[in-house]
Image (cartoon, rainbow, N blue to C red; front, side):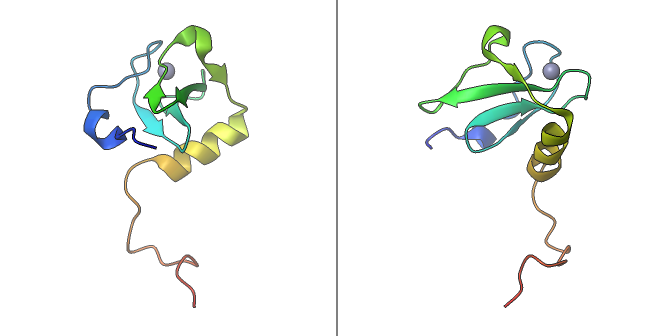
Length: 84
Ligand SMILES: [Zn+2]
């Protein structure tokens, strides 16, 4: 929980393609493209950016994570998030 992704987001990159990474609760996901959908686990607050330890996500799961984890939430989009 103590891993501060924002502090290191600019210098982290996918070790395989050097693409951008997004942060989820317990992993970093390479968000570069759907050709390789690598998930790098965060263990004890330390991201393991090792290709050998990465797992490849199913396409639908990868797309959902990238859509949910890319950049800050748009405050203008009040579709159904903040209902009473
Ligand atoms: Zn990559």
